[in-house]
Length: 399
Image (cartoon, rainbow, N blue to C red; front, side, top):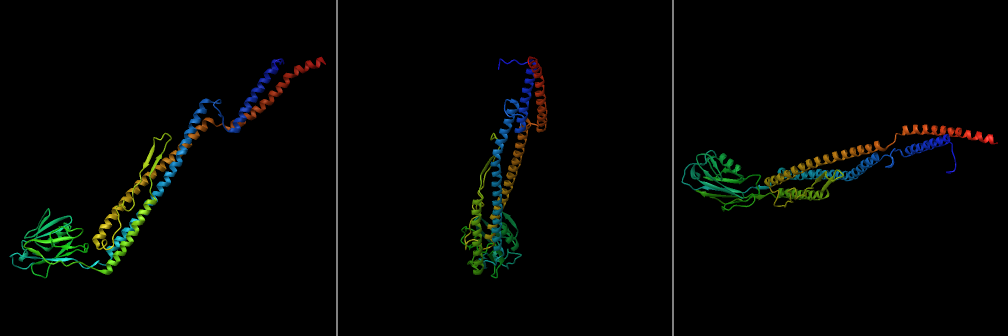
């Protein structure tokens, strides 16, 4: 081919035709791929910058799967908390029924304390400091402390001591010191009758001077007063049957609380960026019955009176508050995760748009270029033909 001699005009037209063909091939490649930068040779800066943006978008997209799974886990946990709250409310409703049930005892425990002093007169509700009760000291002992009450002419209170002159003052002092008995003036001369309150109807009254257990109270005359024989509480069989049934219902709910808590347990650590530096750890909580401070009850021991029911209701209220607090915390974390999920989606879109701006071709422009280059190519072919006509003229002379 090196021996072929082309005229300058033919060579120039041939080069122009080759250049047009190269441009047309480039334009057609851009139209077919939709990109103006397909390799690093097209534009190294744009190519590698776009590749970095695409890689980061891909990394964040992979993290979105974990974030989405975290959202579902948190929603499941929130559903579990809602179910636990309903179960706790049910347990509270059962305990409240105890307060509405008939009295658990037909007769409450009581004891008479009789004055043995030298005074004269008749004891009345308005004036206890008369007759043989004048100056007497009666000591009330519970599992949490003791109270020494002096029957006197004035009213005064101190730490573990009090002086009273009327029945109202005596009952006020007993209530403020959590001694669950009510005092009345006995039909027996110079005597006061102490009877268990409705809330503590199941308690035992003793007169030994020894601190009792549970809701019991020991009542002892320590100065010029003597405690008589204790009348024990008498349980109402029908009422206690109802209460035992409520204990069974309550225990069934407690069991459901434990199984529901196990089904909705979770521990999460979510990563929000490709470097692993932005994370959120959500620690699960133990909210089975024991974790909420709730335990099964025992028929014949619990729900015997309003006091035991109120103690259970107090524990249930505490459990309910714990659930509400955790639900609030879980809701905040769920909101954070959803916000980060939306942010990641938007960031991926921004990165992909940035990459596209660097590499995508303008199809309208490339289509116009293709038409123009096709026309130029046709013109170049015609020009090449014209350049060859001079040589054809020489051929005609030789003929």
